[in-house]
Image (cartoon, rainbow over all chains, first blue to last red; front, side, top):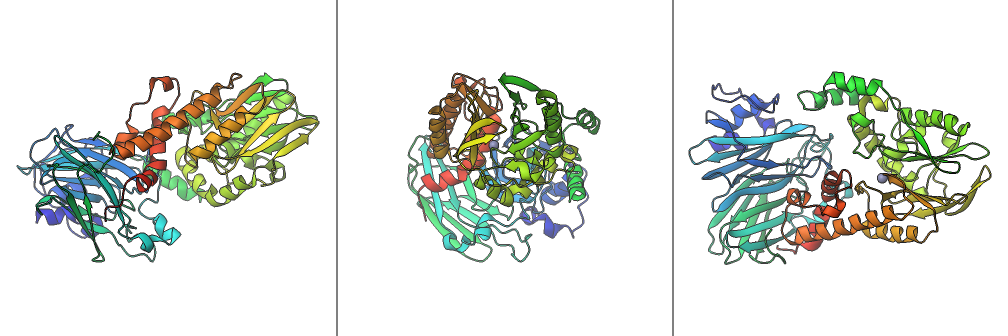
Length: 261
Length: 317
Ligand SMILES: [Zn+2]
């Protein structure tokens, strides 16, 4: 139930009454939507603001269709989930990441529809959410403008093509990979929502290393940086979109041409 | 249109950390006060702030040039807004004693081009590529400028220049110019040499003590244009942003930054950095005097990184 609450986009949640709770702390970012999202995402769980969760944003959202966000919670032990959300986006939650055998570190790119707080909520094994984030200024149209490949008309020609590489060192393997996908939000006239919605990373023995639920506010041609345990064999990447299409790829641990950063 | 933009501006500023309304009112009420300084016989430079476009500078960040001729002033780059264009028109009467009789727009960017509405469209000229790109991108720029600059933009609309400038010699009011059509910073970068004084006006092909901006740049073509600029005999270089120089510093600096940027972004992709890590990379100390270096680096990461990944990372499916 907790997972179900957290992963629903707010569009669908507007009809639900906010749950009564007492323990949501005052928002240092003074967002008009903090109480609303807090109730939806955290339910009755304990929530604390925590500087050990690093949410790294650029000084300017130069392209509101492709705004990089990096979350580094490696200073915390026992991270179960990382939820990235933008309070004032029409689709607030971007990703819900579960680093099963992976470092609590994730980078991706999201669309922004206006100036908004962008946050990471990191849930530890005891159920507590550790939250951090910042305001970022953005021009309009990130979620409500059509993707470039829709405008160009060639989105279907390259759908699901994957690129990526791995960089191994003593602590594990950094994976960087991306898909060609329009990631339609459903907010553009005559284009229904169509996005990659699940992602699984597995090792050579088929053991799941990490999993992610992905929403339409992730940028077109979604790209991810993760750090998984192990450096021996190839890593498998499997994704599925809301149309039921499945995409898969394989990354060798040292396929990056230079040392891990 | 303007009213709806204003509503959006008000909404985006609510709850934010930007300037309080009173401070914004004071900044705006003081208006534009462009200053002209004589840099060669009959040539005045109007310096822009070496900053990012921001409410505190009204978008007046690009350099403009006034050149006196027998039939009136030649103005190169009328600035970011209608009000700034009008302020330059008044400044022209002060320093040359004549009205602006011809306007050149060096390239499409709004900090250089949006003041054109202050002048008769018949006297506003640019390269064909600049006209073409302003027709397609001007309204998008306009939305962004209104959002950032609000009241500073009052009455400003996208004034499309005549796209009739061709390379070669041009004489106006008894003064002779050599016109060059280049590209690299954008699809059309106009370069003007004032022959009498050897003043070479490079537009945004040249940045000086201020990091280059790359939203429409093709770095390889830009480097080619810098080589061409170096080959043109001149006494003084006027960059699009930053102070003038007479020893080629702006050419060397722009080339150095672009070469470093290109190599560093390639390296960042190949060593597995994500976009925010690339935007946080160390900037060499030789660029310490370049203003807004971190800001422009992060903008450039946004302009180039996804394309570089598509080019440099292998297929894995
Ligand atoms: Zn420019």
